[in-house]
Amino acid sequence: MDRVSVVTFVVVLGTMMAAIDSTIVILALPTIVQSLHSNLFTIIWVILIYLLIAAVLTTQLGRLGDNYGRARIYNIGFIIFIIGSALCGFAPTDIFLIGSRAIQAIGASMLQANSGAIIADYYPPNRRGKAYGYTSIGWNVGAILGIILGGIITTFIGWRYIFYINVPIGIAATSVGLKVIKDVNKVSKKFDLVGTTLLGTLLALITYGAASIAGSGINYVDISLIIIGIILLFPFIFLERRITSPVIDFRAFKNKVLSFSLMSSFLQSSGYLATAFILIMYLQGIRGLSPFNASVLLVPGYVIASMLGPFAGRLSDKIGARIPATIGIGMMMIAAFIYTSLTLHTPYLDIILASIIGGLGSSMFYPANNSAVMANSPKELYGSISGMLRTLANMGIVLSYVIAITIASLTVPRYVAFEVFLGTSNLIGGVAGKFLGGIHAAFFASIAILALALVFSAVRGKEQRSPIKEQVKERA
Image (cartoon, one colour):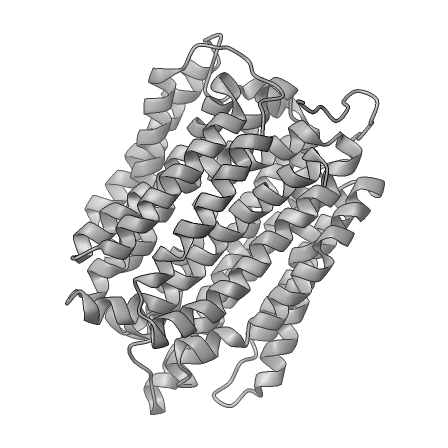
């Protein structure tokens, strides 16, 4: 196996571990609540702290990769992720677990921020779609393993081992990564401390306020935090446009394909990832399925996406990202529309069919859109743009969570929606019918957001992917 293939394997493995960890935690939350004698409103921060930190740090850590070496930051990220995973497994209290998840999130952010840039370093523009197709396999296979392993490990071994499982895999991946992943492009620039602080603060305020609204409802404090975060965006932009080494180089966004591809990623995450939250609430709360059985119904969609990701990526290498990515979003909209017809007795086959359609859409969108982003990024900003891509996607995940909980719970008390989402309660009779109305409204909101993503994707333009300008670079 040549160096490029080994590098790709390590990047795919890192992506897979991040996916495993996300789905495993969701399924284990009810057990963790009981084991640590916690409560739903506290333990949900095991998820939220991860999303908050990933959203705040990913762009900055991508920039750090540009300055000090993407391979170096990526490999350090693996080490931090392993340490955080071990601490999560050891956690004696809920607060300790949340803090350990924060450490784990820092490592995951370093992996996420630089993985796309490493692929861009080792592949020319006309071959990146296929490579990003392989990384989509890592994500979807990881999600499947998380669903299956989460149920098996939590039920038969213990929830702590959903974190411990990362340790031996991470050690093996780190040992290989340190040997084969080398810094191909490194640009020495001053670190933008003021810009980094401003960006981190505004993202933290907006994300925390939005997540808190999902948990406790709309209040003046959280609305104020979001408004302050938005206001801080203006001095941040003003500063970044006037310094020589900004954390985000806005000159890159003059490229229409790049800026529209980033917006497509954000809106797709905001719209489609909400459907998974809402669907699990429906299957657990209204149909009475266990978290494991409910999630297994989504496996066919992940399988399809895993199988077709590289082929869709190869297609985008040939014809560009616009057509396959836009068709992919359209298929996600069709899946969400099918979900708007859910009843108290919808056949499970209909849900599996919609999952497959959504999986087909995902397999077309992710490789194509990611390769379009990197193909239109300046080489010296690969890490920064890769980090921005992940930041927007992470912000979209948080927003999707807010949509799922807030809209779906308009017809029932918010604590009931939380209990349903965590699999600790299910609804019967008239309450189930009312909650179903909220679920339908949430799916329609997802369709509306996906429609915006489709527009941005369709009008982005066709990018140029010439293999002449950039060649695959390897270090002996």
